[in-house]
Length: 240
Image 1 (cartoon, rainbow, N blue to C red):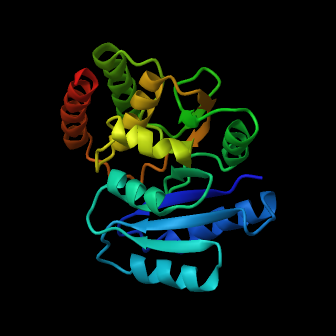
Image 2: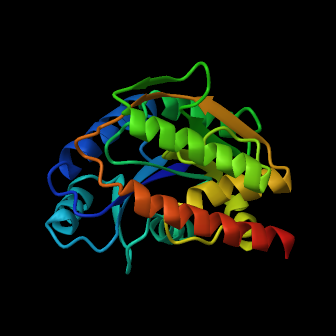
């Protein structure tokens, strides 16, 4: 039996934090009944609302929930802070909106624990994936971005932006040393690129994904600029 931790990065999520964390907790409790096997990490990115207080209350109430305070904003920083503190065999993350169907937890776990994979990533662009409520703008943006990755960096993975990724924790340090260093959203894409370049065994997991368009805080033009700059930096690190 391998232990695992799922990190949920949050920033000003007081409206839904309690409900969503309890949903994940109940699911894991039902499917992984050994309470010592797993934990949910709430990585707070400097929230200014009641998010941190709600997370602390959940930590006090539920043994399997832990709050990690992240000093600055940034999804990559939240993941690095959480994962480098972890003692679990497997670390991963998903978004608070639970866009990825929770049943994929089970597939991801078995891919790493019993099937010999080093890293698992969800993809919304596989022919077997089922994507709901996705706006045309977000669909086009996602496909263009992933096409750019393949053309500019020479990568083969299908979806670098999906917020559902898992890896064996002992692979984290080599991936970070290899160039997965971004403090922002691009960190999870860097993980895939470096893993591919290092020849790790990667599992592509077609997912059922339901976009919560009302809750999205993503500024697509600003994010696109950040991604392009990050791609340029990553290519420099590859050549170095």
